[in-house]
Image 1 (tube, rainbow, N blue to C red):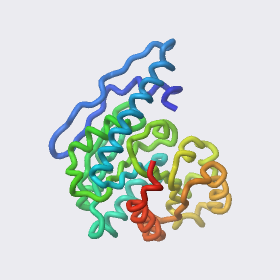
Image 2 (tube, rainbow, N blue to C red):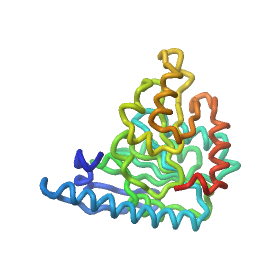
Image 3 (tube, rainbow, N blue to C red):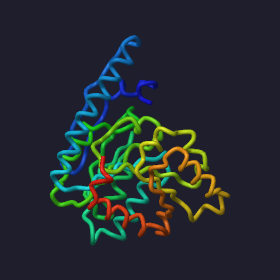
Image 4 (cartoon, rainbow, N blue to C red):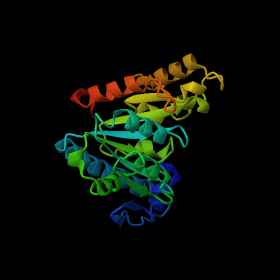
Length: 254
Protein backbone atom coordinates (compact mmCIF):
# COMPACT_ATOMS: atom_id res chain seq x y z
CA UNK A 1 0.00 0.00 0.00
CA UNK A 2 1.06 3.56 -0.58
CA UNK A 3 0.84 4.21 3.16
CA UNK A 4 3.71 1.74 3.50
CA UNK A 5 5.89 2.52 0.50
CA UNK A 6 5.39 6.28 0.70
CA UNK A 7 4.81 6.80 -3.00
CA UNK A 8 1.95 9.20 -2.21
CA UNK A 9 4.56 11.59 -0.89
CA UNK A 10 6.27 11.71 -4.27
CA UNK A 11 3.39 13.00 -6.40
CA UNK A 12 5.24 16.00 -7.73
CA UNK A 13 5.17 15.61 -11.45
CA UNK A 14 1.65 14.72 -12.53
CA UNK A 15 0.31 16.08 -15.82
CA UNK A 16 -3.01 15.66 -17.59
CA UNK A 17 -2.92 16.04 -21.32
CA UNK A 18 -5.07 15.87 -24.38
CA UNK A 19 -5.29 18.01 -27.46
CA UNK A 20 -6.23 20.96 -25.26
CA UNK A 21 -2.86 21.04 -23.48
CA UNK A 22 -1.37 20.12 -20.11
CA UNK A 23 -2.92 20.79 -16.72
CA UNK A 24 -0.77 20.47 -13.57
CA UNK A 25 -2.54 18.60 -10.79
CA UNK A 26 -1.45 17.56 -7.34
CA UNK A 27 1.09 19.74 -5.54
CA UNK A 28 4.02 18.01 -3.88
CA UNK A 29 3.27 16.50 -0.51
CA UNK A 30 6.14 16.12 1.93
CA UNK A 31 6.05 14.29 5.21
CA UNK A 32 8.38 13.49 8.04
CA UNK A 33 8.81 9.83 8.87
CA UNK A 34 7.09 10.31 12.21
CA UNK A 35 4.00 11.82 10.71
CA UNK A 36 3.80 9.65 7.61
CA UNK A 37 1.02 7.38 8.84
CA UNK A 38 -1.19 10.30 9.92
CA UNK A 39 -0.61 12.17 6.67
CA UNK A 40 -1.35 9.13 4.52
CA UNK A 41 -4.57 8.56 6.43
CA UNK A 42 -5.42 12.15 5.62
CA UNK A 43 -4.61 11.62 1.95
CA UNK A 44 -6.84 8.56 1.73
CA UNK A 45 -9.65 10.32 3.62
CA UNK A 46 -9.45 13.30 1.27
CA UNK A 47 -9.33 10.96 -1.72
CA UNK A 48 -12.47 9.17 -0.52
CA UNK A 49 -14.35 12.48 -0.28
CA UNK A 50 -13.27 13.48 -3.78
CA UNK A 51 -14.17 10.03 -5.10
CA UNK A 52 -17.67 10.42 -3.68
CA UNK A 53 -17.96 13.75 -5.50
CA UNK A 54 -16.77 12.08 -8.71
CA UNK A 55 -19.32 9.31 -8.30
CA UNK A 56 -22.19 11.73 -7.81
CA UNK A 57 -21.05 13.74 -10.81
CA UNK A 58 -20.69 10.70 -13.05
CA UNK A 59 -24.08 9.44 -11.92
CA UNK A 60 -25.63 12.78 -12.90
CA UNK A 61 -24.19 12.17 -16.37
CA UNK A 62 -25.68 8.62 -16.41
CA UNK A 63 -22.24 7.15 -17.07
CA UNK A 64 -21.00 3.66 -16.34
CA UNK A 65 -17.49 4.26 -15.00
CA UNK A 66 -15.05 1.35 -15.04
CA UNK A 67 -11.73 1.36 -13.17
CA UNK A 68 -9.50 -1.10 -15.04
CA UNK A 69 -6.56 -2.43 -13.04
CA UNK A 70 -3.79 -4.98 -13.54
CA UNK A 71 -0.09 -5.55 -13.40
CA UNK A 72 1.95 -4.06 -16.28
CA UNK A 73 1.47 -5.98 -19.53
CA UNK A 74 -1.65 -7.90 -18.56
CA UNK A 75 -3.53 -6.44 -21.52
CA UNK A 76 -5.63 -3.50 -20.29
CA UNK A 77 -5.06 -1.41 -23.41
CA UNK A 78 -5.59 -4.38 -25.72
CA UNK A 79 -8.90 -5.16 -23.98
CA UNK A 80 -10.13 -1.59 -24.44
CA UNK A 81 -8.99 -1.65 -28.07
CA UNK A 82 -11.01 -4.80 -28.72
CA UNK A 83 -14.10 -3.27 -27.09
CA UNK A 84 -13.71 -0.14 -29.21
CA UNK A 85 -13.26 -2.28 -32.30
CA UNK A 86 -16.34 -4.43 -31.61
CA UNK A 87 -18.84 -2.16 -29.88
CA UNK A 88 -18.05 1.47 -30.57
CA UNK A 89 -21.04 1.64 -32.91
CA UNK A 90 -23.30 0.60 -30.01
CA UNK A 91 -21.71 2.32 -27.00
CA UNK A 92 -19.94 5.66 -26.85
CA UNK A 93 -16.77 5.21 -24.82
CA UNK A 94 -14.41 7.81 -23.37
CA UNK A 95 -11.09 6.79 -21.85
CA UNK A 96 -8.74 8.17 -19.21
CA UNK A 97 -5.29 6.54 -19.30
CA UNK A 98 -2.78 6.60 -16.45
CA UNK A 99 0.91 5.86 -16.93
CA UNK A 100 4.11 6.87 -15.18
CA UNK A 101 5.58 8.03 -18.49
CA UNK A 102 4.72 8.20 -22.21
CA UNK A 103 1.32 8.51 -23.85
CA UNK A 104 1.78 5.39 -25.96
CA UNK A 105 -1.38 3.65 -24.71
CA UNK A 106 -3.51 6.78 -25.15
CA UNK A 107 -2.30 7.09 -28.74
CA UNK A 108 -3.23 3.46 -29.41
CA UNK A 109 -6.76 4.10 -28.21
CA UNK A 110 -7.07 7.37 -30.12
CA UNK A 111 -6.29 5.39 -33.27
CA UNK A 112 -9.63 3.64 -32.69
CA UNK A 113 -11.40 6.98 -32.48
CA UNK A 114 -11.91 7.05 -28.73
CA UNK A 115 -11.76 10.46 -27.02
CA UNK A 116 -8.84 9.90 -24.65
CA UNK A 117 -7.11 11.90 -21.93
CA UNK A 118 -3.64 10.98 -20.70
CA UNK A 119 -2.58 11.33 -17.06
CA UNK A 120 1.19 11.10 -16.74
CA UNK A 121 1.93 10.48 -13.08
CA UNK A 122 5.72 10.71 -12.97
CA UNK A 123 6.72 8.90 -9.76
CA UNK A 124 3.20 8.04 -8.61
CA UNK A 125 2.26 4.40 -9.17
CA UNK A 126 -1.52 4.94 -9.02
CA UNK A 127 -4.29 7.34 -9.98
CA UNK A 128 -6.17 9.41 -7.40
CA UNK A 129 -9.66 10.85 -7.46
CA UNK A 130 -8.52 14.44 -7.98
CA UNK A 131 -6.51 13.42 -11.08
CA UNK A 132 -9.57 11.72 -12.55
CA UNK A 133 -11.78 14.72 -11.76
CA UNK A 134 -9.44 17.06 -13.65
CA UNK A 135 -9.00 14.65 -16.55
CA UNK A 136 -12.78 14.24 -16.83
CA UNK A 137 -13.07 18.00 -17.33
CA UNK A 138 -11.28 17.54 -20.64
CA UNK A 139 -13.91 15.11 -21.92
CA UNK A 140 -17.45 15.91 -23.02
CA UNK A 141 -19.07 13.36 -20.74
CA UNK A 142 -22.54 14.07 -22.13
CA UNK A 143 -21.43 12.27 -25.29
CA UNK A 144 -20.52 8.99 -23.57
CA UNK A 145 -22.29 5.94 -22.18
CA UNK A 146 -19.16 4.52 -20.58
CA UNK A 147 -16.00 6.07 -19.14
CA UNK A 148 -13.12 3.60 -18.83
CA UNK A 149 -10.23 4.54 -16.53
CA UNK A 150 -7.10 2.56 -17.42
CA UNK A 151 -5.18 2.76 -14.16
CA UNK A 152 -1.40 2.65 -13.80
CA UNK A 153 -0.10 -0.92 -14.14
CA UNK A 154 0.37 -2.03 -10.54
CA UNK A 155 -1.34 -4.65 -8.36
CA UNK A 156 -0.58 -2.89 -5.05
CA UNK A 157 -1.15 0.84 -4.56
CA UNK A 158 -4.13 1.44 -6.93
CA UNK A 159 -6.25 -0.86 -4.77
CA UNK A 160 -6.29 1.76 -1.99
CA UNK A 161 -7.69 4.59 -4.12
CA UNK A 162 -11.37 4.89 -4.92
CA UNK A 163 -11.70 6.97 -8.08
CA UNK A 164 -15.48 7.28 -8.06
CA UNK A 165 -15.97 4.31 -10.35
CA UNK A 166 -19.03 2.08 -10.55
CA UNK A 167 -17.15 -1.09 -11.34
CA UNK A 168 -13.66 -2.20 -10.46
CA UNK A 169 -12.31 -4.67 -13.03
CA UNK A 170 -9.03 -6.50 -12.35
CA UNK A 171 -7.19 -8.29 -15.16
CA UNK A 172 -5.09 -11.39 -14.61
CA UNK A 173 -3.22 -12.70 -17.64
CA UNK A 174 -2.39 -16.37 -17.98
CA UNK A 175 1.27 -15.49 -18.43
CA UNK A 176 1.42 -14.19 -14.85
CA UNK A 177 0.65 -17.55 -13.25
CA UNK A 178 -2.18 -18.77 -11.10
CA UNK A 179 -1.21 -17.38 -7.70
CA UNK A 180 -1.47 -13.61 -8.25
CA UNK A 181 -4.75 -13.39 -6.29
CA UNK A 182 -3.00 -14.98 -3.30
CA UNK A 183 0.04 -12.71 -3.60
CA UNK A 184 -1.98 -9.50 -4.06
CA UNK A 185 -5.20 -10.16 -2.14
CA UNK A 186 -6.13 -6.52 -1.47
CA UNK A 187 -6.42 -5.78 -5.17
CA UNK A 188 -8.58 -8.82 -5.86
CA UNK A 189 -10.74 -8.40 -2.75
CA UNK A 190 -11.93 -5.05 -4.08
CA UNK A 191 -12.81 -6.36 -7.56
CA UNK A 192 -16.35 -6.56 -8.88
CA UNK A 193 -15.03 -8.42 -11.92
CA UNK A 194 -11.88 -10.44 -12.56
CA UNK A 195 -10.96 -10.94 -16.21
CA UNK A 196 -8.54 -13.74 -17.07
CA UNK A 197 -6.88 -12.50 -20.25
CA UNK A 198 -4.67 -14.07 -22.92
CA UNK A 199 -6.45 -17.43 -22.77
CA UNK A 200 -5.18 -18.07 -26.30
CA UNK A 201 -1.77 -18.57 -24.64
CA UNK A 202 -3.00 -20.75 -21.78
CA UNK A 203 -1.86 -24.07 -23.22
CA UNK A 204 1.52 -22.72 -24.30
CA UNK A 205 2.33 -21.44 -20.81
CA UNK A 206 0.72 -24.46 -19.09
CA UNK A 207 -1.75 -22.23 -17.26
CA UNK A 208 -3.67 -24.21 -14.65
CA UNK A 209 -7.15 -22.78 -15.06
CA UNK A 210 -8.85 -24.64 -12.22
CA UNK A 211 -6.20 -23.54 -9.71
CA UNK A 212 -6.39 -19.92 -10.87
CA UNK A 213 -10.18 -19.83 -10.56
CA UNK A 214 -10.03 -21.48 -7.13
CA UNK A 215 -7.53 -18.84 -6.00
CA UNK A 216 -9.77 -16.05 -7.27
CA UNK A 217 -12.76 -17.61 -5.52
CA UNK A 218 -10.80 -17.89 -2.28
CA UNK A 219 -9.86 -14.20 -2.28
CA UNK A 220 -12.72 -12.60 -4.18
CA UNK A 221 -15.83 -14.74 -3.90
CA UNK A 222 -17.95 -11.72 -4.83
CA UNK A 223 -16.31 -11.18 -8.19
CA UNK A 224 -17.68 -12.20 -11.55
CA UNK A 225 -15.06 -14.08 -13.59
CA UNK A 226 -14.64 -13.80 -17.33
CA UNK A 227 -12.10 -15.58 -19.50
CA UNK A 228 -11.12 -13.68 -22.63
CA UNK A 229 -8.51 -13.14 -25.26
CA UNK A 230 -8.22 -9.47 -26.09
CA UNK A 231 -6.12 -10.53 -29.09
CA UNK A 232 -8.56 -12.96 -30.72
CA UNK A 233 -11.79 -11.60 -29.23
CA UNK A 234 -12.72 -14.88 -27.52
CA UNK A 235 -15.04 -14.23 -24.57
CA UNK A 236 -15.34 -10.50 -25.22
CA UNK A 237 -19.05 -10.68 -26.10
CA UNK A 238 -19.94 -12.20 -22.72
CA UNK A 239 -17.88 -9.58 -20.88
CA UNK A 240 -19.45 -6.76 -22.90
CA UNK A 241 -22.97 -8.07 -22.26
CA UNK A 242 -22.31 -8.11 -18.52
CA UNK A 243 -21.08 -4.50 -18.60
CA UNK A 244 -24.13 -3.51 -20.62
CA UNK A 245 -26.34 -5.12 -18.01
CA UNK A 246 -24.36 -3.42 -15.23
CA UNK A 247 -25.00 0.00 -16.76
CA UNK A 248 -28.69 -0.60 -16.13
CA UNK A 249 -28.36 -2.24 -12.70
CA UNK A 250 -27.64 0.05 -9.75
CA UNK A 251 -27.23 -2.92 -7.40
CA UNK A 252 -23.78 -3.61 -8.86
CA UNK A 253 -22.56 -0.10 -8.17
CA UNK A 254 -20.57 1.09 -5.14
